[in-house]
Length: 104
Image (tube, rainbow, N blue to C red; front, side, top):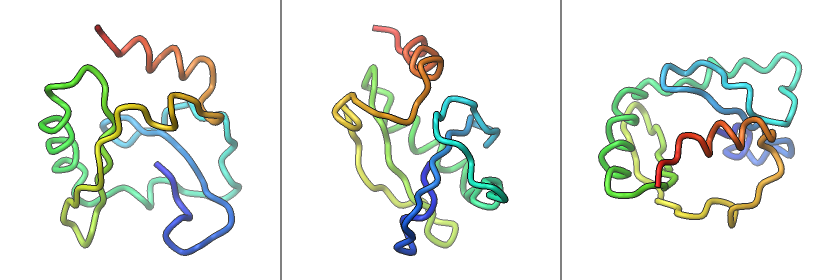
């Protein structure tokens, strides 16, 4: 998840959460002081998970981008090679953890 893009802010805060919106320690970027990621928990998180599961079911790997708009789930896109398979903000341990989830 990324915060700070919607208001044209210069600093984007990236973070990853699990299904229950618990913080996953796989992001190499440090959390900004005073940043409370829990404030960004979508009110329709359960619905978002259900939609993402349905859309991703036929594929071994896909990133499903969804948005919360006043409690409604909006579809963004499906990406099969996010960041061209290159990123600079997930830790090595995070890469392994994510890779272990992919069964081909």
